[in-house]
Image: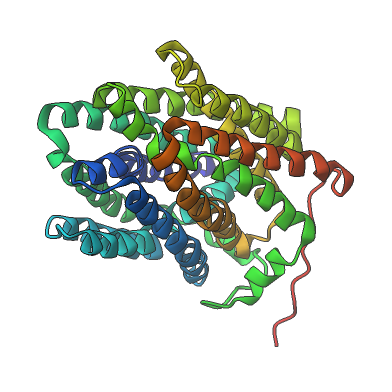
Length: 402
């Protein structure tokens, strides 16, 4: 009976990851080129991307705290997906730059916490039922692979008119998937630590006050923020040098497919390296990757650089995830995941986008040397962790309720 429930739990969460990453792929790969196709300049694109990341850095933790106030995560995820769908529909009716910015802010607010909530739920389900989290999460990556390629192919045929419809399909599918999102059995909830009230900031403060926890997240943030040039301007630059939207979609698909392969072996890699060495591996890979792209290499080297995405994103992701899953109390897991995303894909990424946009505007692909510099900082912090952390699980002291 338990194995059947666990199998259904895994299938339902895998479906949710798949639908969420369908629209996420189109937004990540083609939102900036879509803006460029409408005459938006590089500096303005950087502003929109940075603002979206900053909004996520604020709304992500708030949304996670909101979700931690619910016994079952399907309710907040459903609400957030409904709001995301409405914001995508609004894109059909806006043309002016500032109206687009407003809609993207609403889109970012609505969607920021969804994936961290799903990840937190799946982590606990994996612990309860014994399945491999990485093999469930990879369905999101597989969806990203197919969606990025197919969206690029459709853009080549129908131009960027298809972009918003592609986002809308993903948002609607994610909303439908939310209705069947699984819940943890009551016996698991009963054994959880004291319940955090809705919007209670005490739990978040407990997490960020831990010096090793926050130092690790800063290392993660520098490595993740080194992707700003790639996320914001790779598709635009490749289009300028003659790559088709289909080829650009393939290049992104290769990167995420490499990530999928890494996730298949996630449990073995985590046990082999541990979180600190995973961060070092990710930083070294990032330094190599951005150095390759900075020289505008032949296409074969571009493909090699994309394969390194398995480490520049996947390894650092697993390192942070391993720390959080081993150390954070059950009732703060969504909050911890959101703080992680808020720092590395929010605050740090927002600042990196602003700098990257201005550098790309002036120096084109040479902006990747800035990305390499951020990777070096992440590497230095990761190496320095050896002197303050032996890799053991961290302990958090929770204040008593009054």
